[in-house]
Amino acid sequence: MSQGPPLPPLEQTVPEVVVQRLPQYVRVLGALVREEVEVVSSHQLGERLQTTPAQIRKDLSYFGRFGKQGRGYSVGNLQRQLKDILGLSRQWNVGLVGVGRLGLAILSYPGFAPEGFRIVAAFDADPTQVGQNIGGVGVYAMDDLARMVQEMDISIGVVAVPGMHAQQVVDRLVECGVRAILNYAPTSPQTHEGVRIRNIDPVLSLQSMTYYLMGPERGENGQSQE
Amino acid sequence: MSQGPPLPPLEQTVPEVVVQRLPQYVRVLGALVREEVEVVSSHQLGERLQTTPAQIRKDLSYFGRFGKQGRGYSVGNLQRQLKDILGLSRQWNVGLVGVGRLGLAILSYPGFAPEGFRIVAAFDADPTQVGQNIGGVGVYAMDDLARMVQEMDISIGVVAVPGMHAQQVVDRLVECGVRAILNYAPTSPQTHEGVRIRNIDPVLSLQSMTYYLMGPERGENGQSQE
Image (tube, rainbow over all chains, first blue to last red; front, side, top):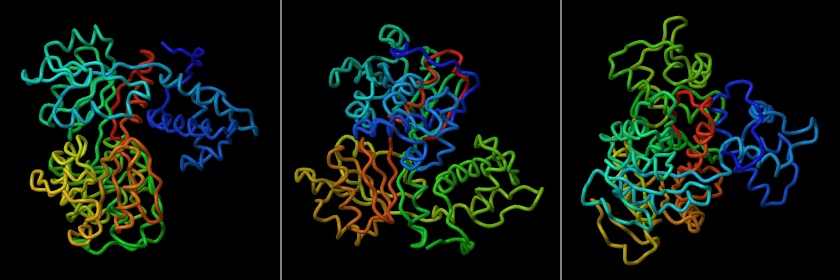
């Protein structure tokens, strides 16, 4: 499926936390490409990513040898290879379940398409929503889910339904063959074997900031991706 | 400001990654309370949080002594103390900037209030939006921001404006004294000294799943909070 060079052999299972960090590496490398930086050290990468050079080297070591000792990494080369490894060199078709307020906001979110994530169909349990075309995306009945996942080659499901329906929708998506789910409902659905779920959880983000509001001595500088 | 017992003295700066993990500890402890579990070991906590017992003990050691060697932690006690440390035993007033689709979805998000985050005012640059009352929350002009932050004791700003305006809105919030910002715009605004920003970044979440869609051997089980 990759459009780049063949992937290096995976000699061991890569820890999930490493896979979760790599998209941030790709993003920082993209910024360096735009700044026309050609070579970067693990020290410099560590500074940009607020981690140690040793952590960078260890994370990358799971995927092969990218740099020469003491020479740093080729920015463009490392970016391309990480994108291939992560599957970011291609387009992924996404199905959205739920076209309420949250679903509409997701449909109009401008950040997905430039990164290769294309919402190709939406689904809703409410028959009055079905048949709409929202900015070029058709709204289908839940009964059409299995067929549309096949026909439109949908690999990723986005869940934007009320919390009480989230588990059921996740189960339906998995039954239909979807193995990656981004959940916006304010619950953490149980996962299935071989299926990835990421929860968009703004409360955890808020709860990690209030600590710094409790006393002035706690408020150094900080920004992070959630 | 804490409503619980006095905080233990902070003998050293707590790494930000530790502060970011603690809300997940609190959540797991809350689940244990509901399950009527009274004592939990670092081993059991580690299993629930997909981390090592040593990591749990190290993280908690920044905040004092919570358990007795070999005895485990008192679930209720640890939960209460962590909530006090994180500032989760009280209510925080939140100001929302931007009442477009995304802003409306945030206003109707049911997950904030039960956790003590109350959106008390909304702001928009569009004069036709100003003066509305959306589910009990008034919409004010950006010129009213400084006054309302004072009057309504707003500690946290939520940014739901187009990416091109996000930096400017963050800067305005900081000028008005807001020191914790949850950013939904698809950009990473530059931070200010003493101010925390968390970015809701669904693209990073998607990009950390596609790896597992690239080959069947990569698809073990997994779920995580972003």
